[in-house]
Image (cartoon, rainbow, N blue to C red; front, side, top):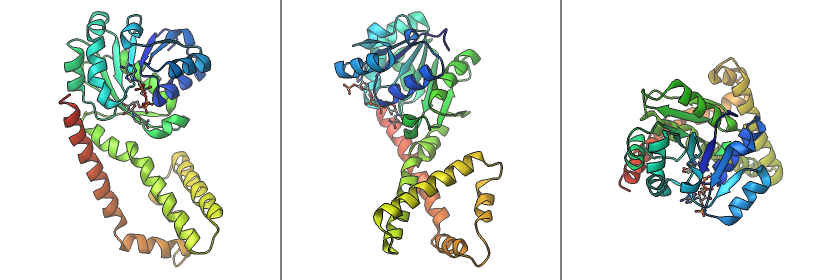
Length: 275
Ligand SMILES: NC(=O)c1ccc[n+]([C@@H]2O[C@H](COP(=O)([O-])OP(=O)(O)OC[C@H]3O[C@@H](n4cnc5c(N)ncnc54)[C@H](OP(=O)(O)O)[C@@H]3O)[C@@H](O)[C@H]2O)c1
């Protein structure tokens, strides 16, 4: 990674997390430049990380071997068109972290011959606990794929998906997924209060249980169903609670929710494609 010169276009939350992770893993600050129109944002990035900054994408991109597009989805068309001639000339690898922007649209905005990789990180990336899915067209080189993996791994593990359409499912699972777990925490907290616990205790119990279950599931060799079985004795308290969830159709509810999220992701991508 230290050989790469990376230009981040957009120096907001996600770029900040990726840059922090890259520096912690040994990348040199001098190898990173960030474009952001916000002077306060640039000062913060220079102060906190010692990276170079520019106020425009066009000024950041020329020296870069890799360009990470980290602006909001609705800004992607404009930013891509602004740097199109430069990346066509340099053949820099362009990595998009924007939700819902399709490779076909990026290619249309950036022009021909630019190697492109689309990624879908998630919110816990902001604390280095993210998960990112990546997709590239078959003609993108192994070296480019490795570069993209190494950058996104700054915020957590990565997985590659074999079809771009899978990113809609990714969006509905890991992209939106933190909200499902927050909702579950809210529900547990509210139920605890209803049963007489004070709010602070109910929240601590709910949050720490979510954390513990997530860490166990991540560390375990057993599948989650087996971990669940291990805490569910016949006729016990967990069995009584799970029976209520199953009877209410919790599996079908989650399947329907995730399907709705994936459909919305497809529809949003089509809307961005008209920009
Ligand atoms: N945050 C998440 O949880 C998350 C998860 C998955 C994917 N993503 C994706 O990551 C991308 C960035 O999200 P974020 O949360 O980091 O957004 P953000 O904090 O708003 O950062 C975007 C930055 O880009 C700057 N910008 C706007 N126009 C620009 C231009 N022409 N050239 C250079 N910089 C420009 C913005 O400046 P101004 O504020 O002055 O406009 C802002 O500082 C989005 O596309 C999003 O879909 C985010």
